[in-house]
Image 1 (cartoon, helix red, strand yellow):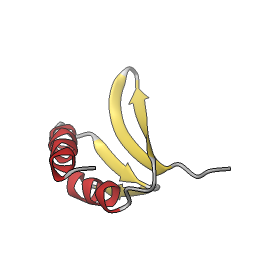
Image 2 (tube, rainbow, N blue to C red; image 1 turned 45 degrees about the horizontal axis):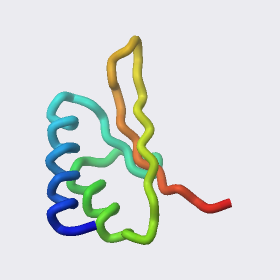
Image 3 (cartoon, rainbow, N blue to C red; image 1 turned 180 degrees about the vertical axis):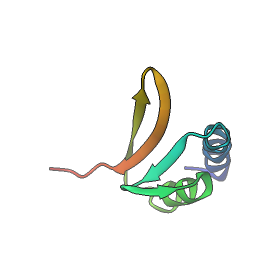
Length: 69
């Protein structure tokens, strides 16, 4: 992921975070910068987004590393 890609991800997550939506990384609370850095540093790993809704309202966005089985 390029530095531009990292900044785009950070901006996207920062907007979500500012809307009061919780961000999680590997099962732990995180923030937009922490997630962007983790994904940028671990380019060889894939992360899956999991959108958590409550009564049709987005409450959390979770990022979990995809492990090969």
